[in-house]
Image (cartoon, rainbow, N blue to C red; front, side, top):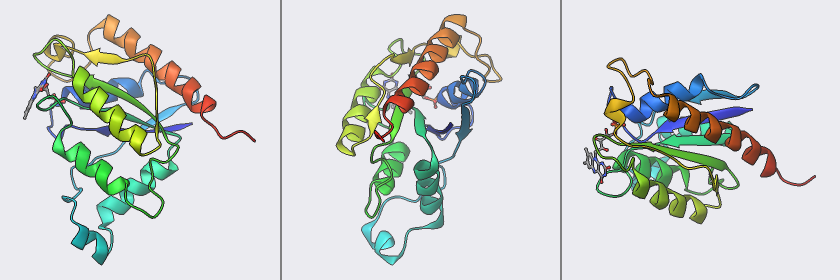
Length: 184
Ligand SMILES: Cc1cc2nc3c(=O)[nH]c(=O)nc-3n(C[C@H](O)[C@H](O)[C@H](O)COP(=O)(O)O)c2cc1C
């Protein structure tokens, strides 16, 4: 089983990217996580789309289409999605073959120094993904509040409780992907 990781933050020292990296080591047996980048996705413009999808967009859409599931880790910006993540989803959503159709998606969020851990971005993401006929994992939810106290300066996860929450979510996501397979 192959999961694609997408981070909503572009900054080098991102806590959300650090959380995704931690997940690579916590994946259940037989499941791998490949983390992609959305840093090179241009701003959505219908004129550009009409002239032909840019290569970074084609790459991202191909990665999403090929994955058994997508794990999104995102900060909350002004109570909602960061622009790069919304922009990437908008590109991915365009016909033909909008790539979130029937795609299991798990969401985590990290925030610093706030304590809520990006709760609101998760609900906005769920709303958008449901609209695209994706299958967001209902539970568990993982919000990493005060992320600055849970990762060290190198971005390594140092908090055992967060490690357990992430492990539970990843196990639940594997089961969810199996459950969402079309009936034969
Ligand atoms: C434009 C902007 C808006 C933000 N708005 C929120 C917010 O609404 N809620 C919140 O918890 N944190 C907010 N933050 C703080 C982020 O949680 C914090 O910068 C976080 O570390 C960013 O994630 P990253 O470490 O993955 O880059 C905001 C940060 C920026 C730059």
